[in-house]
Image 1 (cartoon, rainbow, N blue to C red):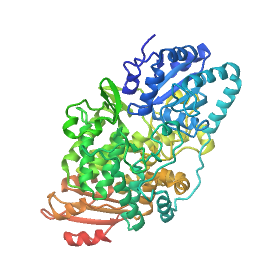
Image 2: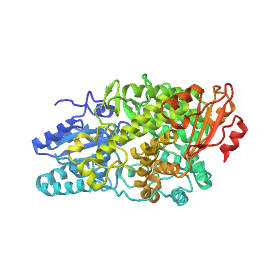
Image 3: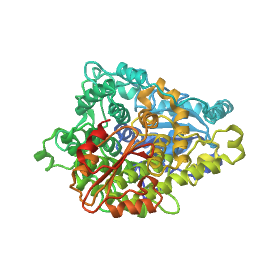
Image 4: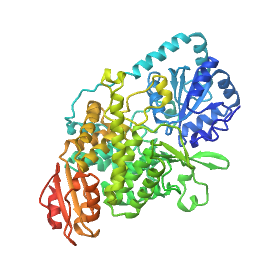
Amino acid sequence: MPNRLVDAASPYLRSHATNPVDWWPWGPEPFAEAARRGVPLLVSIGYSTCHWCHVMARESFGDVDVSAFMNERFVSIKVDREEHAEVDSTYMAAAAAFTGNLGWPLNVFVTPEGRAFFAGTYWPPEPVQGHPSFRMVLDAVTDAWQNRRVELERHGAAIVDALAQAPATTGSLVVDFGPIVAELERREDAEFGGFGPTRTSLRDSLEPVDAGPPKFPVAPVLRFLLERASVGDAAADALASRTLEATLGLRDSVDGGFFRYATRRDWSEPHYERMLYDNAQLLSAYAVAGMNDVAEGIADWITSMQQPEGAFASAQDSESMVDGARVEGFYYSLDAASRARVEAPPVDTKILTGWNGLAIEGLACAGRLLDRPNWIATARAAADFLLEHHVGHSLIRTSIDGVDSAARATLEDVGMLASGLIELGVATGEVRYAEAARRLIDGSLAASTAASATPAIAATNAAPPFGVPGGADPVLRAQGLVMQPEASDGALPSGLSAVASAAHRLFLLTAHEPYRAAASMAMTRVAEAAARQPISFGTALSVMSALAEPARQVVVISDDPMDASASLARHWYRSGGLLIALTTAQSASWAAAGFELLEGRGSSPGVATAYVCTDFVCRLPTTDPAELERQLAK
């Protein structure tokens, strides 16, 4: 049996290389093999720090008898959801037709044409609490395939038709944020703080029975609340403060990084995997909130994930080895001295473009707000690596040890990296980062224009305002499974929200109206859903807040980084606003590169000059720090 996973660009796939299952990586070949043999496929999706993925791998995919049955009756594909995000989101949407208990591992049974006809998450090796065993599921699917295949294929085709339906493009961007904040207050756990969904899955039921709903940090929602707080919303300010305090229950008391979620209402028992995307977003949130010690710990953990080439690894596992067995949480129960004597949980060292963009943005934003140039330097090293190795003729989604994945970049890679580069350009004064971000967003707008010209899209007016150069995953495209970009944000920004945020920031720098118009169009598509379910649209709501506020722009030109005006400006934060402090030479470089906000912005030698603008109309420049402070307070 060939081992197709041993050299994969994903540590998650490599971890399954020793299974007796005849795994295939994602691609057209396993579908052709299933068609040749006349059998269905099992598409099994997970990620390297997923606890229940490890459990199912040990219990079922490592079982010789179960694997033999899988090899005989199925073609099995192993997918890293972080590597192939588009594949994951497509099959997650299809799986919703079969189960409300969505999560990972996600196991989807599909026809050789790619049509899903059954799906679930974790199945145990033996029946538990009314839930079938994995082998029982395999037997039932085999029976259905052999005896009701026409029905299964018809059902799968209906799901494909449903997925292909374009979302409504009408709507309004006039948003009343008061009721949205009130709805988030209603979702708050009044006793322990934070927000949490109900527990419905088998995996949840295997947690302690008194655990209550899982609690996630919901970082995009925290950022939205801070955006509204910055423009005087007292209710949003209070809710943000309470939630930030409650979320500290996920903080590692030793090194300051945050765990992914808690299994108990009181935050006392985390699931111990730690994700780059959570910590990156929380870093900027705690920095904006002025909780400097917390931000310090997060930045230290992110820095510990930095790889030799400068970019950041994607996650750290929840399990460590104890006496030859993998034990969840053991390492994190130890103090610093004890940890130094045991093996730390493994790190998923793959470099994801989008998640690195979030880390660059978090470090640059927090470094600017808290006067930590070392954080900004760390962000610069990651950005330089990505610009050299992941950005070229086509954007690379992920790499590991110098090996590029064949997975297509997604809209989140475009938007998150562009947002990080803009924040880094603002923090460093180096225009090259903003220019790189502009090229990414211009490419996304061009890709949308190209998609709109195709007959199928033109007929439905379904093209979103942003696209991905190179298009969708080729296997999904060949199977007719290409979906519209995911609109909801969840634990991290959706691609649509991320690229809209970057486009709006570029508008504030350039006055180029198509950037603002595209961001507005994208948010109009999700405004109604965001108002109904704000817990799932935090980043989109942040962009809507920025679009709703007057465009406040603050430019400080000073050749003395210790100047009082420059220091004051660096700490300014406001929804819909942009702050940039540059030297005279840097300002000239930005203006020459076409960033209109900087045109004509200069200062007299040795004197800092500040310009406070609204919608590109600026007040008279001031050289008085006290006057600048008064203007910023308005």
